[in-house]
Length: 102
Image (tube, rainbow, N blue to C red; front, side):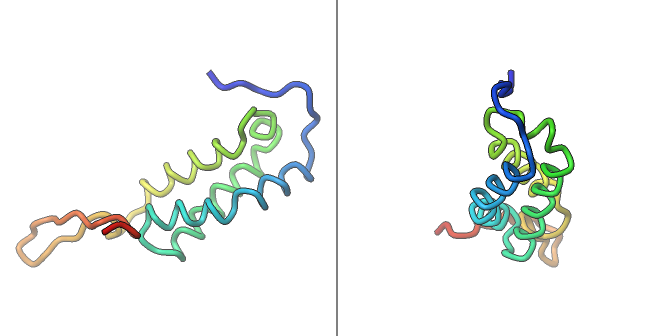
């Protein structure tokens, strides 16, 4: 169950605060999922755009940053392309090591 705040009025300034607080770590998270900083930036912007479009509801959540991260994670997993697996000439699939891990 998601708790919603009822003691605060949500406005555009609250979204600005969320954006400034979350954007850097959101891009880093999405980049780690996608394997690309550029793709990560796109995923983060999409998640933040969704939050903005749904701000009356999202802004009333107890932890709107968690909602935005969940949207980015879902979008990162839904991205098409070769970031998680690649096929060699024989058609075998090899999982790639996550970015930043050895």
